[in-house]
Image (cartoon, rainbow, N blue to C red; front, side):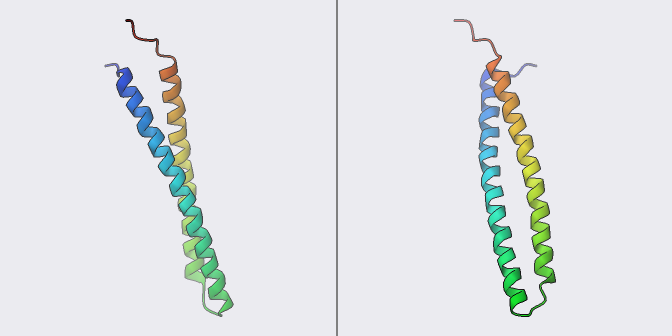
Length: 93
């Protein structure tokens, strides 16, 4: 069953919204990493054991890598949908 132009357009808009959210989440993720890195430096400077805080930084980085991969998939889907919509012949009047 073919998907209507309206449905395909809504899919594109939904993916574009997801892309905006992914960008915001990634930006927030980088802020969290920088904040945690600051905390690690503060702990070290105060002579505290910072191993758990360092582990958290590593986990945050790994999570961010996955978020960036997911963002790439969303961007690819947006591109696909845009191309598909651009290649759709106009409806007959």
